[in-house]
View (cartoon, rainbow, N blue to C red):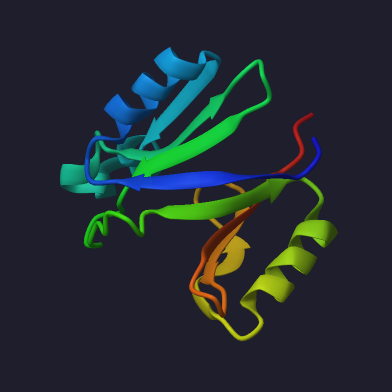
Length: 138
């Protein structure tokens, strides 16, 4: 799979409804994972909230979104970040290194509980970036 760049929207508890709405508008395939799916019993009150949603359309659009993680504040107007994802670890690590330069790392680029390598940083211009390196299937 080639690397992709797409918007990632944070929601204040209504990610499921929003992502289902976007599916109605754009069509395509929607996948939703809850905090409970990923974190199991540790998810608490957030178990049914969306940890990661992805809509892929036949027209080539990709839109990702999630409910804010527990304990974080939702900031309307500042709730869009940019996701870069794929399987090419060297390419994606290069992007990560460039984006972090002069910025702030909030989640180090390392293996996560869902199996992928993931990191989050804010670049020197204040843009939040999510980098996810998928484990190749097969």
